[in-house]
Image (cartoon, rainbow, N blue to C red; front, side):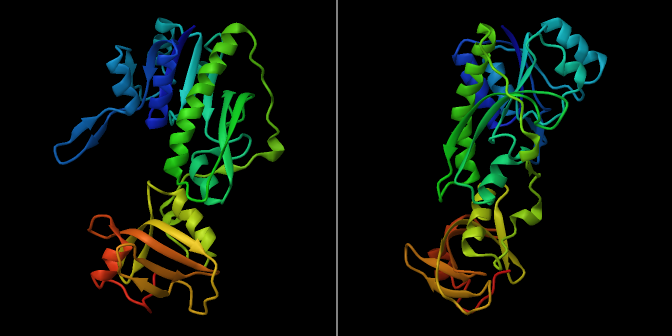
Length: 312
């Protein structure tokens, strides 16, 4: 089956690698434009583009999918199926309707839950204990198409969004490959979503990353894990931003106002304990503004924080 692949970030790269390894016929790859980085304005290809070029697959970075240029591209490669993984652009009806076997999307949630831009982050931030991946037929709605298959996996109390991303890439790429083979064999099923159960995973904004110590410690930690490693959780110590890289919540009776530092340790495995709206959040690794990542113990030994300071 002739497949056109659309995707951009690392999860799409891993999925493309799996499809190639499992022998699928990828006739062309569509991805986002190269990014300009650094002082020299050097261009960096997307992870998907870099992998495709390694395998000699034609790569295209159209600014729009709605013009005659892209229509001609579809005619040239005549894909029987389009596979989409985190492409980041809406596919118009003309593209959705083109392939004989439709357009498939790999979405990192158990649809209809967490439709939208940030399903991994929002699921971790909400304190869920499980999530998964869904392969679905695409339609004109936002993640509303019929489901072909799903796979469930656990979110542990220490998992970050980055951990879930990596697990989803591994599980999801195999699931998508199997769905394509099922379509080829004529045994794929399609199950309509129950739209009444739908929830929405909005894009992560800067304020989502600021730790609100008025919340219980467990919720603070979920929010930190949900935006780790990117874009990263932060708070302020005075006027200086402090990124929180690792933390541990625990129950404790504490009368200090939330955000107050109630205990510190400058040992090798040191910590900074912060009062929350319920319980204590123990900070163990952080990144001060303008500095590299360091342990909480190093930060304490540098006399940068003390009991009674307030994080906001």
